Image (cartoon, helix red, strand yellow):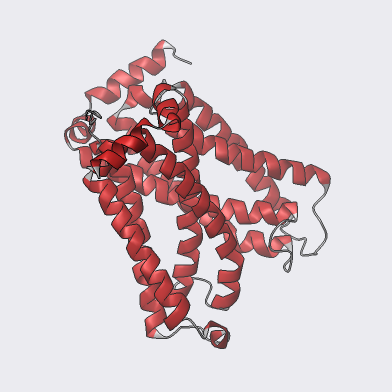
Length: 161
Length: 168
């Protein structure tokens, strides 16, 4: 996706004073990226523990609902941090990110995985049993893990694509 | 020292990674994935040690739940990190942030050993504690500070790495 509206938006961002400040201070991007990685760490460990529990690989001594309740905050508190640091990086280098296929793929995968995460929360909101997850949800949880791996990889690939 | 680095630099695996355009980013992606899981799982243990998170759960069950993830992810991070290092051994070995990261890693290891064998050797007797002894809380805070610094140092390597040619 590289239509002219998107390109114009990139040019506009490049003309802002915030863009100039970020361009002139290397430490801003480096710091934003480091915080971004720390927030990703929070999301990933939460996602991994929840999905391994749904798959029945880890943490079976507790119901799925307990594990979701315990770790979902790691995901939802980190997402705004990711959004803010991500936006600052975009303003600093709009053309490197917005028009980049790796970035666009990353956003698509993010949208899908957020829907899956919400679906899991809804499914186990009132279900505190120790019962196994059904096949559909176990498959979804594999998809969710694969998407998060893809999101991290796509994030790194923004620098190369 | 330089001879060893040139030897590492010249090995076939290093050459393959250097000359293949997509290998380096893929190994890097795997490295980031593993590192985030290492620090994410360690941070959950540290936050419990410090007394910020999960106060109603015993530290022993939290560490039992998370340490297998930490170690598996650490293994992947170490292998991928070593692969990235070999591809450009001379540059990395002269990079301030790379050397700093290795020193911080060593310190995190020492801190972990101190907890494992001295401070936390009676960890199971703390099962009913909400706030842990000061030494344990300090150990958690040091660990968290070290690992956050490791992330920052690691990210800075990418901005400061300068090409060094292997000319003997």
